[in-house]
Structure formats: C-alpha cells, structure tokens
Image 1 (cartoon, rainbow, N blue to C red):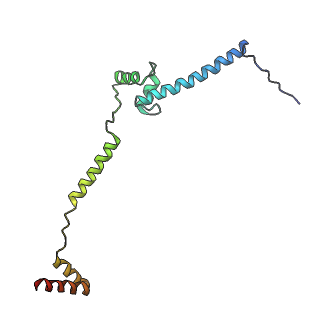
Image 2: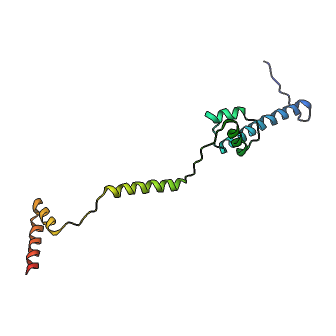
Image 3: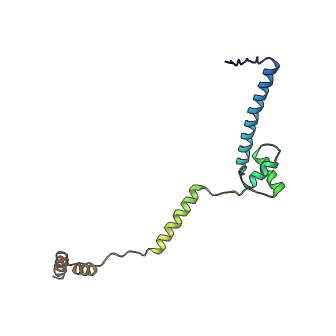
Length: 142
C-alpha cells in the first residue's frame, strides 16, 4: 500500500508565495470579468449576443458604461436604443386606449319605457306584471 503524503507549503516560502499570487490573479480575473459584464449591461449591451458580443471582444478601454457607449458610437456608429417610456405610463395609456375603444363601440342604454316593459311582460307571459301595469294605467287615468 502506498500512502501519499501531502506536504504543506509554507506561505512565506517562494512556492507558497507563487501559489498565493496565482490565486490572487484568478480572483482578480473573476472580479474584472464581472465588472466588465456589469459595465456592458449598464451601457445596454448584451455580451453574449449581437453587437454587444462584437464590441466586448475588441474593447480594451476603461470599464465604465459611459466609455463603452462612447466607443460603440465612435467606432461602430451604434447607439443603444433608449426606452423613455415609463412602464406605469405605458400601462395607463394602454388602459385608456381600451376604455376609449369600449366607449366608441358601446351605445348609450336608454331606460325602457312603460310600453316596452308591458310588451316584454306580455311576450313572456308574465300576467302578474301585465295586469299590475294595466291596473296602474287605469288608476292614473281616473
């Protein structure tokens, strides 16, 4: 049976310092990548597709959204489309449009006249309502 013995590297020895330096560089690269992607995202560019991907592959300047936007405009003539609409304002406008459509298609509803109610009651065979209405008409004439 062979036992493998791992030796601990003293962080103050050259080997340990090199390992610490390599670890620090790896962490720094991860943070720089995250910062870069955040800056591109703030500039309105998606680094995984389209123009954002193309620009991210050639851009080596300052990692700020303003600098990235300026580079994209100067080098490629690309401007990120600006959406000035407020989501709530857009919802209100859509709801108002639907309301306007409904009011245009809906007609005013007039209250049925006494003659309409009487004709409907006779058509449905509602004798109680028919007799009550005719009795009221007779009482009004007297």
